[in-house]
Image (cartoon, rainbow, N blue to C red; front, side, top):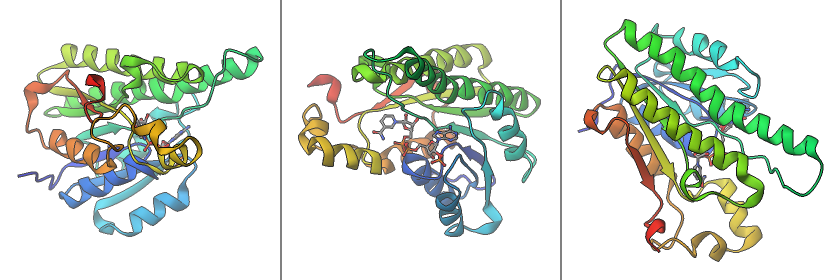
Length: 251
Ligand SMILES: NC(=O)c1ccc[n+]([C@@H]2O[C@H](COP(=O)([O-])OP(=O)(O)OC[C@H]3O[C@@H](n4cnc5c(N)ncnc54)[C@H](OP(=O)(O)O)[C@@H]3O)[C@@H](O)[C@H]2O)c1
């Protein structure tokens, strides 16, 4: 049912974790994928090497630099001249403890808002202008359960930025329908290397105790939903936020 042949999809943060699995899954469904990475050139090249070279492109950009998303957009559109779907997946999560000096607190806030919210908004802006010159397009913004229930105290910038992604997505969905569809996905714990490390450091129960499903989600769950949305199979779901958290809100 899901056929993304001839679709061009940009996935930010595709060098590892959810972004890497998402890029691979989109490619498997027939899409041409633009893999964005920040520091992980080797990782991104390793993933790209497993894909059909005619349907993969790599772009680098440090989204912590203000305005970097504009250069990323230009580089991403170059290989095929257009983009149908943007998956805003890249994110950072530096700790900002209330206790301690102001400088590291402020740096963590600035960096998190820049990467997780402002760069997302910048890419949405560039994509909308492009979509309006074409027959439309799709934005899929990866938020987090933290947007709705908060996070650990040192990760307030992360939760705040992810809540901002929800407000951004809903606003754009309302403003630019019907041509532009905008979806948000809000995962709870997802079994990436980072979460595996958390489980090793704090114990498996720290991650799973609030999840009736009993384990963190597989990154494939998020990737499958991205493919479904990118295929245009539920246009009237625009503006929606899709929770993928193993029923943890209801525990
Ligand atoms: N894993 C979870 O449990 C979970 C839960 C809820 C929401 N999410 C969300 O799902 C998305 C993916 O999460 P993940 O766990 O797969 O992340 P991850 O493994 O930590 O990977 C983050 C990705 O973002 C990129 N990135 C980070 N900072 C960047 C920067 N300054 N410039 C450019 N790229 C940057 C990284 O690229 P490089 O390594 O190449 O620099 C990497 O590809 C994120 O939006 C995250 O907030 C994850």
